[in-house]
Amino acid sequence: MGVMCQILIDRTEDGVFKAGGLVTGRLKYFIDKPTQYRRITMCLLGKGKCSWSERSGKTTEYYSNSEEYTNQIVNLYVDTNKQELISGAFEYPFQFLLPIDIPPSFKDDTCYIRYKITVTFVKANTMKSKKTFDVEIPVTSYVNPCSLEPMIFCLRKKIFSFTPFNKIDVKGEISKTCITPGHNFQMTLTVNNETNQEIFIKTELVSRLTYIASCNHKKIYEENVKNTSTMSSIAANSVANLICVVPTLEDLSSVEHTKVMRGEYKVKVTAKLQFPHTNAVLYIPVAIGLRKHEFVIPAAIYYHYDGEQPSCSTMSPHNYMFARKDEEKDFMQYEKRDCRKFEKEESDDDDEIDFDISDAIKFDKLNIKEFEDSDDEQNYDKDKHNIEAQSR
Image (cartoon, rainbow, N blue to C red; front, side, top):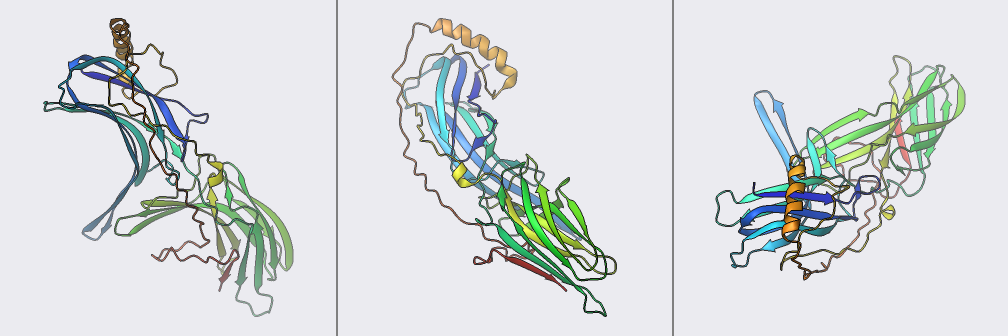
């Protein structure tokens, strides 16, 4: 049977771990017979990867990129040429500190960003020397607001007409450009319709995912978020004041702090005109998620075990995640048997080492820009909060 393992995670209130926060729990494993191990390690690994292919004629191009966000390793056991044989049930508390500037968990057909706690048992002098157990933890991160103040915008449209009454002006203000998931963006609009036809003003939320290969080639996927659109009619030769609400969903979140992808949101304002005139469209950049000051960074203490291992524990497992769910019953059976066997043995001389971690927090303001399909997506207008779109 070899070794069985449980990774017991202390759950948070909402079941999600915050960037800059602690991940705590206990590791429990059982070795059924005396075995010589080279090392036993525990690791918190955060990694992102994207990959896709594009076909042009008979040629297929493959693109990919990967990035590591954290890789914290703790040695639970190291054989220093003692050729020790270990067996029994063991239990360790563990604690990892997530970095603050990391992206949230994400997964689709093109890209994933995931965080795992992995326990690796490496035997000595055997062909099949490694056995690994892991459990994935969900992580959320902060977002940078597109603007720290309410944003003012303007949309202008001129239509072809033989009269001077051919202009449409939409002036507005969005109160917040960064909100938490499930809340609403609120806008006030003043629409001046100087044409001889009725027009419609439509607002909706747009999601855009940009996947970035290592060669800087990009794949872009954009869609309108369902159930977020509203439409109002504006009579010919009239002025209307509108209050527009653009809702968000609980499962929506911007994705930042990674080089493999970007997850962005825009509020789309459309002036819809009658045929044969074309519509006028304006995109307002927004962010969905918690801001940096809403994340609390606690002090961290890491446990490093390189001495004598502790004895088994009789703590009942509750509120946990199993690395191997199918072995839960067997694990509990062997743990109880081994506890009776070793109940007279004690080992309280564990070494505890505080890791020196520097939490350097960098606040990089996101500047306002419109969606562009060119490679020059980093040129933001740092001095303006007003956006003006003119359609000819």
